[in-house]
Figure 1: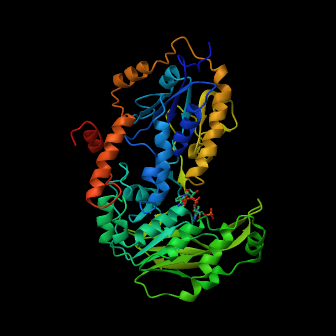
Figure 2: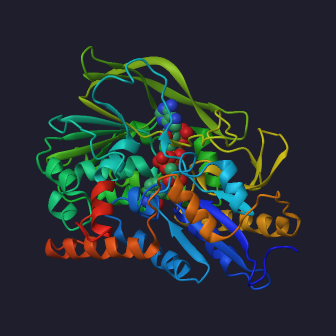
Figure 3: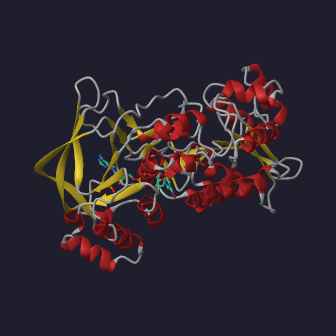
Length: 465
Ligand code: NAP
């Protein structure tokens, strides 16, 4: 008999409780023609992925999306199993012996490399670590950033670069009202950062940031966003691109930047210097980051209807003590799960996992979110993405074939996890932690005081914190 009835639901394991995981869970659980039960796993005791650990603390409004996830978590056939690591406490083979289908929504937790000399000098950091650090992500709380530096470079022109530059430059009185990690706030209060170089390898018309994010930098109290007028001059191809583009975001980005020209250097003590058409080619030490060599770029046809940066052989050195490389996130491979190292995603055909790029479908295995398509788009982009994968899962549900040892009973999974030494955190456990964080935040007039170590999270959940 095919699973999917009230007494024998289709049992689905989802790994990764970020936006893609929750959107997929909701789509599966809301079906009326088939009964699906979802176990949503996360290696951390806390749910919500980048909404908790990535979204900047001064962007609390973005976090209201959690309300949608809470409604999903309240559904009867939903279970959260936090603090369980895939590959160790539950392997792929074990997953397939207890679930009809498994969906991977593990995101893109690593960073892309620039591949230039000096990239690993002390003082050169991937933006991902800084973001995790100020957001009290347990993986990054021990990171240290030398904020006695006066001059800092942020490489990249995406919204993560905007977040990093803003958190470095923002008045700490404002950050104190957010859920930024306490230790990060203290470090930022002592910060001596005066100049932040925001480095785009292409021009202002190609920048990946969006209008509210660049506008926010222009409007930060105590900060001047300084541009070089010559770098805002557009070449004919960029002008043609803006003229033909249906999406006004790039045109508006250019307008916002041009509006900064009359302000010149400004009079504020902190400066964000937005530079365009420059690529870092070397970070110089020798002992730590001391300066950055930039090569001036021009824009050339990329052969795909767009423009790419090409070096001109003209170089410039800027003295900086700290570099944040914000050139994009990258997926990480999971034990026994196919992985495309080149693109940093799990190979898939519209969400159905493949055994290798361009290979055969791996039955009963699926992907959604950044580990499916790469690190692009905003939180909401993951909704249609997850729904599309869920549609494939539902389409395949009638033909799921399991072996003789298959045991879909939730108690069987619980027994397995216990045997493997896992101590799963339920959604009710998380809510207890959530309430404690909110109560601790209230005392300091902030939305929450995040608990930053897994040990303390578990102690609080068990009533010992
Ligand atoms: P992103 O938007 O892809 O931006 C990456 C940036 O790095 C681009 O400017 C890219 O330039 C540049 N870059 C790539 N390789 C480079 C190299 N070798 N040297 C110099 N520059 C290089 O990535 P992201 O900023 O990490 O953001 C990831 C996703 O999360 C995005 O979709 C973003 O919009 C989203 N996000 C949204 C928010 C928000 O809504 N507020 C906040 C954070 C993140 P090219 O364009 O030339 O490739």
